[in-house]
Length: 163
Image (tube, rainbow, N blue to C red; front, side):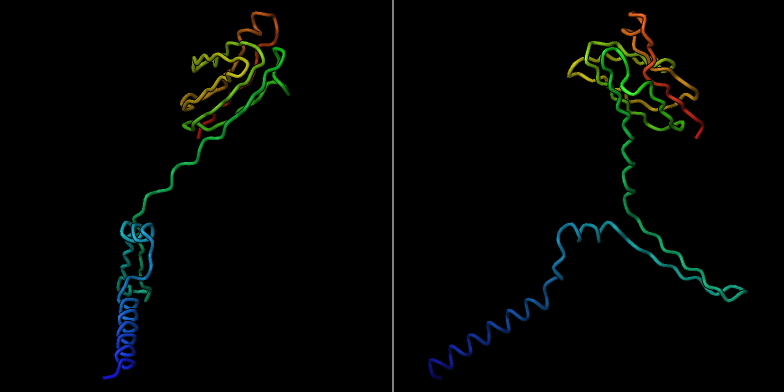
């Protein structure tokens, strides 16, 4: 066997090995796709035809439910002791999460009646209210600083309606 024949035989063997590897190897799924395929199972059951000739088919998929959406944030600005744009009306169904962020250009003490939540706000330090709306009714969010100064203390009215 000549030198050129040996080189040709080696090249042919390499080509066969590469083709065999490509054919036998898995279909290029990424780790995420393989994990998703392992955690999601689909089962199909086909029942027999009933009196009306129809068949019943059910498909059941086990997968993690999507996370609940983030609650909407109501943002309120207080300047010069008054709510920019006037007092707000915040409506939500019972059981929902409520998120309110109040920025103030001066130190202020804020109170949500009914839920008895008090927060401090000031320049660069907004007051953050986050809670579950488990009481139905209309609840006033007020500024104690404005009230003490003889100004309208109402910042917002929280309306919690039956869901």
